[in-house]
Image 1 (tube, rainbow, N blue to C red):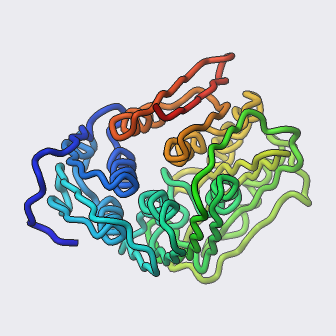
Image 2: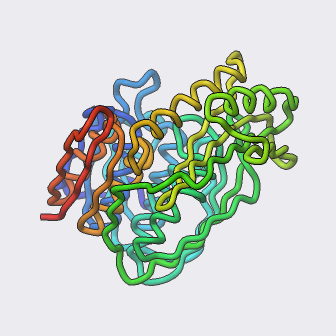
Amino acid sequence: MARGENISSELLIIDGSMGEGGGQILRTSLALSLCLNKPFRIINIRSRRKKPGLRPQHLAAVRAAAEVGNARVQGADIGSEALSFAPKGIKTGQYRFDIGTAGSTSLVLQTVLPALLQAKRVSRLALIGGTHNPLAPPFEFLQQAFIPLINRMGPSLKIALERPGFYPAGGGRVHVHIDPGDRLEPIHLLERGNIVDIRVCVLLSRLPDHIAQRELQVLSKALDIRKEQQTINRVSNARGPGNAVTVSVISEYITEVFTGFGERGVGAETVAQRLAGEVQRYLQAGVAVSEYMADQLLLPMALAGAGSMLTVQPSLHTQTNIEVLQQFIGLEVNMQEQAPDRWMIALKAR
């Protein structure tokens, strides 16, 4: 990544304070810039946050995108609220991206994956950082829910967890194998079919077993989970303590994964109750796609030229992501409420 070089002033300008105003605006812009070979400048990066501008996890995404796209970058510094990015072309191969903190490995993957899906050759990634931290998709969501859907669009992705990384210690390690295939095919997710199974897994690192037992007790009652559907995974190779509990809803046509994270000062029962509420919302809405999955699928659907999904009421995060997509791509987006907390989102390239 070359810094300090002149980048043309004729750039697409993205306002990082629009809508939800978070780091997703930057990551989506970086991903689209790589895919379309389109330079951009983003201003007001996370300007309304307590610590505005680029934080280490955002800078890691910028550096990863710059390496994959052989890009010229200005403003890639901690605290920077403006950044210019001009890619020169996608490079495939083997990459190692170390966030250096407990920042999310999945969000770095989210930034570079769309471009590598459009490349002509295989790429292999080693991602080092957080694998199970709040406000980002955990490893199990990627492995069980997101990547199978991307593979249905044509590519062949494989992901493996060498070591989990919990907040705040980080140090997790994820390996991703990306065989892009010929092109991304549209996908339409309008029904989930019958529920085949619901499984609960509690991850514990350097914490007492009673935490897992209390979480499972709440979830088994709220979701009618039997003993044979429950697993406790005692992690021995993480750098620090941590607790994450996942609920996998396995249906005929789609698998969804919901996650709760243990927090200091928050009871295990509270963690489990919040998680149960998310799962119950999804089940009661009768939709195919969760709030978080809808957000993740917008960009690949846009790159495929079309797609649709039945989901819960779109969040501000999702609406902001759509706005960024429309600034880069000629895209028709139709969001229609069919019933309370039941929405159709359809995308089509102009």
